[in-house]
Image (cartoon, rainbow, N blue to C red):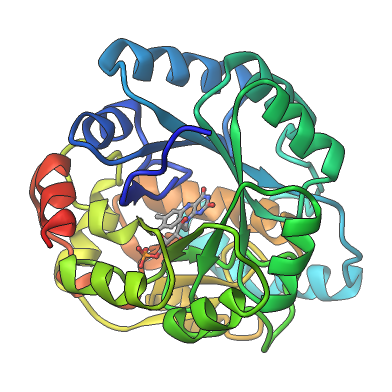
Length: 331
Ligand SMILES: Cc1cc2nc3c(=O)[nH]c(=O)nc-3n(C[C@H](O)[C@H](O)[C@H](O)COP(=O)(O)O)c2cc1C
């Protein structure tokens, strides 16, 4: 497997991850990542080609491993009613609470064909066969875990490395299940708990924003860090303008299901505040709320957009990605 650089740029679907960001990070000696989530397979293939045109270095591809879970239909219907005033505010209709697996199989086939150096998974654990297929194609396979028990399952599936995601992290909880109270452990504690279960290489994610944070993660057993929020304000990132403005304005973050039906850490805005009881149901809730998010984004209104951000977002800097890599790598 290709050696894992110390600084990994987290995959960030729905905007922030771009070929320009991944290539800038890899060219600076880190490891850039593309995010296949929410994109059509053909678009992912184009992003891989665009990244290869910008760098000869290794980069990774992240797949959201979406599998069907049982959902409470009545709770979904009630939630669609609860967000109806938001839909009216933006002049849109809520979406139907449909399931789709984000073209999981097509994206795995694409990854095996395109052979990025690393393929990482979030959400459900891939099967042993799926992991082996990617390894045979030459990809190192990383699986995101947020509980020590998940590390054991991921190792049994054949993972080459684990992305250990502390509760500080921005964006979705990558844990295998969306259950309150699980997968909500602070990064340093989680690294030690996972290390007690496995000798696999650990990539630490969650709230790491500077060299001191990198040192702390390494002291706790990580060989690398995966940072998302630290790159959100870089010019190479595709972070939408209202998201950038909200980061500049600052404020607290919280775990919320309001936007997608899966717990995720977002800056607190009106939508988060008004919907503390959103049901678990991914991606059905995301399908319900999608038109509201899209309309708010088009209107440049940050109050109904998912503003994914880690707990330490106040330390994010508006500098080129190479500078972020350099400052994280400072020993
Ligand atoms: C805007 C945003 C989008 C994200 N999208 C993804 C994604 O598509 N796939 C994934 O595995 N993780 C995703 N994450 C989580 C990151 O992989 C990582 O766990 C997190 O960014 C680490 O915490 P930090 O943001 O404090 O650095 C996302 C995080 C953010 C902030």
